[in-house]
Length: 344
Image (tube, rainbow, N blue to C red):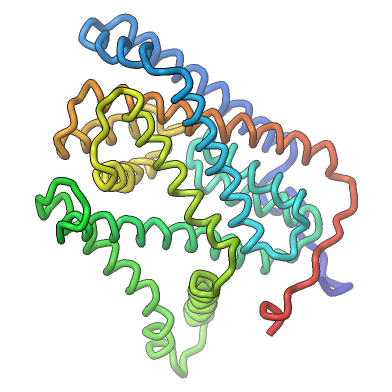
């Protein structure tokens, strides 16, 4: 950072320590209330007693393994975060990444909230605002790209008979094709934008050029060999494994590609601003599994167990990390030097 460049303060970013804490606590309380209501429904509604029975008879050791997989998913996100924010010290960066996961799990508009909190924590400790904005966009696009690759591989794999699953074109070919088209459109966007914006000036042109630069940086990160890129895949795949293992615990396991497709499509419901996506995500998963031929009792049981683990593991671990960050917010940060490749 140049000597005359001062990062904006917390008020300018729209977040303060008090506001962030309040949003997180309110989100955690909301999660607790919603989970209690869901548990009450399982106990009170006779038609849901089958779901309750299946959940209560799940092997405890399998549930513990599922929790371990979710911890691996969170750890993978930390690795991916440190790949993108390569100037950030490891311990500090790990805590910021876990804090993002906590806000993403507990606060409505989770994805947007987590990005905002991560940016605030970084800028508060002296990172350049422009660098944070660009790197946050790269992190979002990188993880989204992995989602598209996984969706395309599962959908087309089932359609071509490489993977077992329902070969109905609407349930295999269409999702797979959408993943391919969106992914390659994403890669082509900078070239198209450069041609359209050639010789033009103005705010929109500057925004288009900046977006093209961010997409190119994302593509470079995705296609440059680096072991930390495994974190981007592990963040998604370990989380999907939790859902698959929940079915395994019930003794009724759909094909893995079916789990992947229902997971990927179902998570689109998280665009609805409900804390933790409780109710909305569960309903989407259960409905999609029904389309893929999975019995509703098994689908509901596996979904509820998965969602509980996927919410509370990152929310708990991330909350601890956030509190540790706030306790150490006055300690100096020693930013790491850029690697040679990054500098070039």
